[in-house]
Image (cartoon, rainbow, N blue to C red; front, top):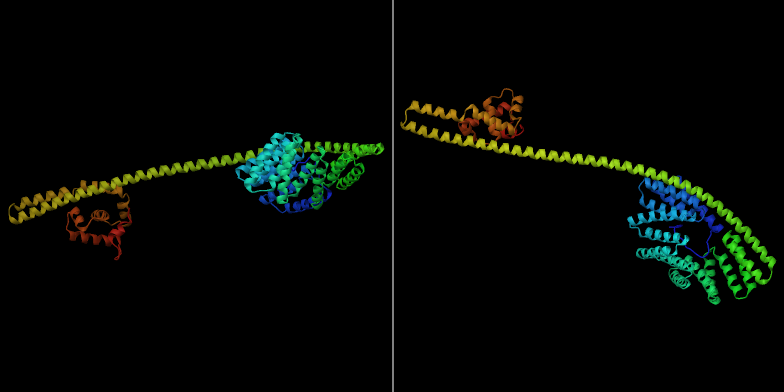
Length: 525
């Protein structure tokens, strides 16, 4: 991701005019495309890319683009977009000198990256947090974050990230005055950069290594690594060339070759002015002052000291102006952050209320379902009990009817045999018939039947007003699926009479010839 990784040097690297022009062309293209996107993931991605192209040129515009991306990404719950936006906000605030705010944003991006298990994002955020701590002078904290970033990059199979981190750890040790450790990390960064052809940290590692060799008066080694750095910087059009020539000047001056030092430093000054890099221009002014002092040309030394003072004052004024602008802009951004946080809080509160309402509805639904299920089960159990009771009562009547029928058959046999007087036999038979077919027994049967089939009799009467009580009785017995013989026993009539009665009932209720009475009665509950 461009613009999201710091390569720290003992030199402050600025952007040349050609690079600024290339960035501006890309910025113009992105601004044109941005107009076609609604507030969706495409717009968020475009804004984040825009922020990355502003990074080295305009911290304020970078922050504005990333802030808009963050606002939209949060509104549409686009986690990757949120993480990227926080990363660019961190870079923007770091460029603006607000390191506390930068670390806060990087930590937010890190939290989301860890949640999403995005190793690339996690390593990048850890590295940028380390770089920000280094800029604050907190070298030990910075080194810890760099080492964590290296481990994550290794897990992700990224080879370039660790090389940059190794270089930056070397820089941190150099700032701490631990030159042996600094050289160790620079050499490791140089070796790995050559393996994977990663020119950027390779060039800077070579340059800073030459500075360390110069410090310890190892001039031949300093020139050797600086020659390689110059060759690579020329091939890759790196704007550090102005500084490389300036360091050549320092080496040759230290070797007692002021004229050679003068030629190299003047070349470095010309490149710095051509690229409009004020820092390199200032450093070469200072070098030229020292060279002319050694040459004994004090007027020229004073001339370059004056040039240095004027430009330095101008840079400071510009820096102060930019700092004030950045402070004002930072205040405006913080106001926007507060407003956005309030919007997010309202949005999340609305989601919470909605989810609570939905949860309550689900609970009510489940409760209603549970109650319905319990009522259904209870009704089902009651109905099953009623059906068992009806079957038991029907069985009792059948058994009773069977006994009476058996006694009647025996009485008929005795009567035919002349053992009992005919008058007494008829009376006894009538008593038995009355016993089984009393209105009370049929009423009890009807009550039990209607509890199981509550609308059976009423439906038949409604559809067939002329139906008789005996036909209703036969219909009920038929619905209970009793056989002809059982129905005859129950009703106290012959099986033939049951068949005839069923035929009349079929005619009464209009049962088609190809349908059974039982099938039709099933439709009556």
